Structures are given as C-alpha cells and as structure tokens.
Length: 181
Image (tube, rainbow, N blue to C red; front, side, top):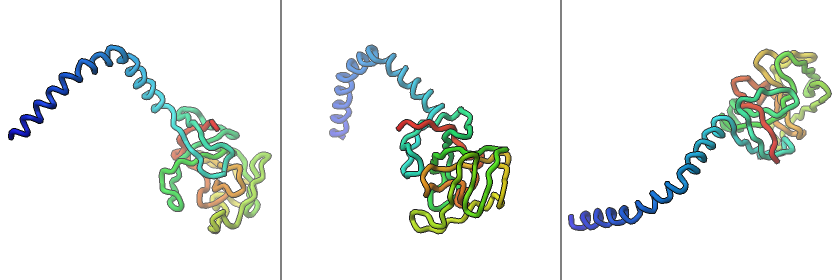
C-alpha cells in the first residue's frame, strides 16, 4: 500500500510540473494543431494515395480523387474483389480504356479499343495460365451499363483482357487516379 501511495504522489508531482508546459504549448500552437486536424480531415474525406507495386503502368504513386468522375483515357482506381491471387480489397490502378456504351472488339486473346490493340498472353509472368475475358463475345462488343474495360501499359498487366479480372463494376471504383511519380 505504501508503494501505491508513493506512486500516486510521484504521478501528481510530475503532472503539476508538466501542466504549465502543456498549457503554454497549447496557447502557442493550439490554432496550428486545430488547422492541421481540419486539413487532415478534408484530405482524408476526398483523397487517397495508391501505390502501384507492379510494372503494369509507368507510374508508381497516384493520388485518388474520390469525387472525380472517371473518363476513358484517364487512370482509374478500384478494389480487387475477385479472390486469389490478391486479397479482396486490394487497390488496383489501371488506365480506363472503355466505359459504358464504348465499343471493344475481341479477336481470340486480343482486344481492340479505339486506337489501342491489346495482345493477350496465354501465361502470366508467374507462369499462371490466363484465360481471355469471358464477359465479352468474339467480335464487336458494347460495354454494358455500370462496367469498365481497364488495361495497364505493360504487356503482362493483369487487366480486363483476362477473365481473372474481367470488366470492372462501378461499385468497385474508388475514383479517378492522378499519377504523381
């Protein structure tokens, strides 16, 4: 019991010594702390950072704007929700090539979107067999409502060419991504 009283007295003395310093810090820097917390809240509500750890795109770090509309030609960030090989919820960043109503032509493993021709691979970089997107039929296709056709710039990018990813659902989209570096 004596040790507990000594501990309580020590804590009380340290608190009395520390409180004036804390109050002086709050008086000098309180407004800066409030503004910093407000700024962090605004940033957290509207933006995210995405890191691309693969060579699928030329950039590695992206700012995701949650409220920006995504448009073909720009970058799009979305959640992976297809199970293995990535955990559900993994953030993917790809180039948006076709949105609702756009035409995509499928020729076997290859796809044509506007001026882009995407050559499909039979095996990925890890040696895993890749199957062509089975959501699209051979020949001309119109992207259905609420779907997106995405692609990376690298020949081995895991993108909408393959059934493993397929077309991205609007509900999986986080927002428009802007490359930083």
